[in-house]
Length: 149
Length: 293
Image (cartoon, rainbow over all chains, first blue to last red):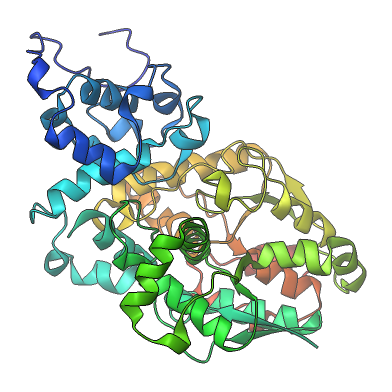
């Protein structure tokens, strides 16, 4: 990947994805569609979301790959990814999507699946005191709203 | 004097008093009173994107109920995050009456049922549409001559389209205001890029990266300061210059200003309403060099 134009770590470069038809459209997939209100199969892999994402360099799975993995029933990989926590809901992907689907809502849906099981990313009690005293109130509230249950 | 209901929110009442005071005083000078809601709560800062999460919409809807109780049909706010949350929750209940009914049922107060008729406006929209930039220009007693400023909108003033106060990709509203104050608006391609937002709590490095990209782009395009409307963008661009210095050794020392501070100065108000002591990068040397203060 010496000539890779972006900082992406491609998904599963060394082994093949073990696809299973059972996982496509299963209960978790339907829950993600329900929570997000988006139809995952509308994505046609144009890559506009990845091209505009300001957090792409902090993601292990690129935004368009998130859509693809969900279409293939690989929601476990999405749930375990760094990308869902890196996403800031800035809505750049959504306003640029030619199919009018909003990845920010899907990212939120996957985060919700986790934080509703107490799999929080941030523990409010562990935020250092100097940070608590320094950052504006809206930073703290939004961080805890987005990354904990 | 015109009166409009005003929701300051948590941050403008605490760390961003420079934004709040400069807005109130400038509006007073323009013949408008920002009438703070007698009762208000935190709006939640982020619009809940999960379709079943109605409880998070109760806080912003309560603020709209308080506005309705005053017999008013408009509510203005300054913070981009508050604006976005209020605007999106309002649009959601206006579109989905079933969800509105559920929220009203939850609050269990017949007198406090939200009817869905309050309009949420950002102060920039009032300055543009109700007062008019041409009228503001006429009232400018101290033109901000020679000051080159890059507008920075961030994410939530222009996205998603339903909540946008201007064009999604190429907003000009803040630049138009800057020009009407006698300063020069400078085009900066990073005007709607995200500053790293709430990652500033747990990952200061990523925010320093994003802030450096935005600041260096503004400087490259000739800006002497960046103008913003969001206390979180302000913090990330201003305070995180300290982290940029630690990380890269580069001292950009680029002042960050709220559009209301510039409006106040242009209207001839003293620097005391701008509370420049709350800035990490002090804008006063720049303003003095341009004979503005």
